[in-house]
Length: 74
Length: 351
Image 1 (cartoon, helix red, strand yellow):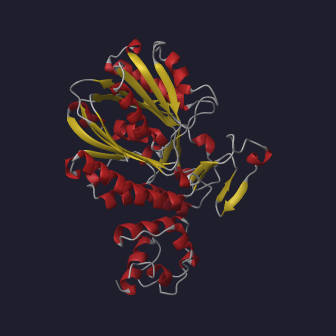
Image 2: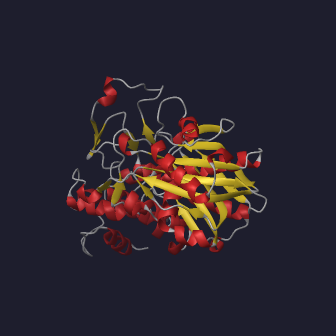
Image 3: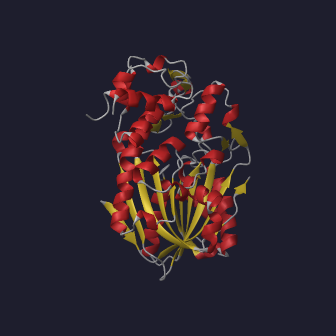
């Protein structure tokens, strides 16, 4: 999956983010719409759409959208 | 592995009772309106029932049991086994099941005891009751499950308060030659005991002055050490990685294809978590009922409450194959495959 495709999947789970609003270097926790609930929503997205289990520890170490992308299996 | 079969036991009836008083997450003003909307959409919990002060789990279980006995046309003196599964007993001691034996008018020749489990408790309770019935001369039994969780959550803890509702349920089981086998798969992982915990109030950390102090543990989370703590991320990871293999092992062991199941009734944790588990296992959404919207997470009452409020009608008149699955505090999880035929399901009691 390209990072562009990945970003568009991530954008789709944020209610207030329009397509094209996220960049690889966007720090997702600084988004105005960020809430701790999104941590679970992102982990669920990885589980169901990317077939990848992401732990709380792994997620805590991520700051940018690019960091999240790196969690995908190579 | 705790995979086993119990023969000659039938589930005959289910009932549930909840408090009349409803609280809506639409009015949960500890968080902003935007957060509230996201919370309701993500967790699936819009309304919850809240027990008045001093009303216990056993009070709901008692009313549910009285109604179910009536609807089944069973007499109290025919029942010789009563198990109460809860983490909100009436007293530190004695066991609540024994008090319920007397209140229900069960004979003194019956045995009664408590099991301290939460979200997995209905499935675990079924396994104990079914096994005891199968290996004794006892013919009829009641399993009472539930919790009053709203007493142990802090209003200023958005990770717990908006999730939990109160209620009690009852299942009636009978030993009979014509019953289909019941299959269980039960598991435990105590290394995760801190994922869902009330720190103070037991023997490890007796209640002390600090137990009552409100502490901010993270943004939007202020609670006391005697309140429930829930690590949502740990519980999420636990559930999505452990529950699907447990269910698949059970299906395999029982020789049942998931397409043969009429319903897959899960413990009601939250919608995002349950739907993730459902998708990972690969079960059709139409077979998976939810009571989260109106009742929230009702602990060990959640599976029977979901059946009573969502799929009672079809179970009352037909034969159905069910897979029930509980998971959570402990960490403890388990699933069961059983068949019901013309199940007696009482109308929901609201008191």
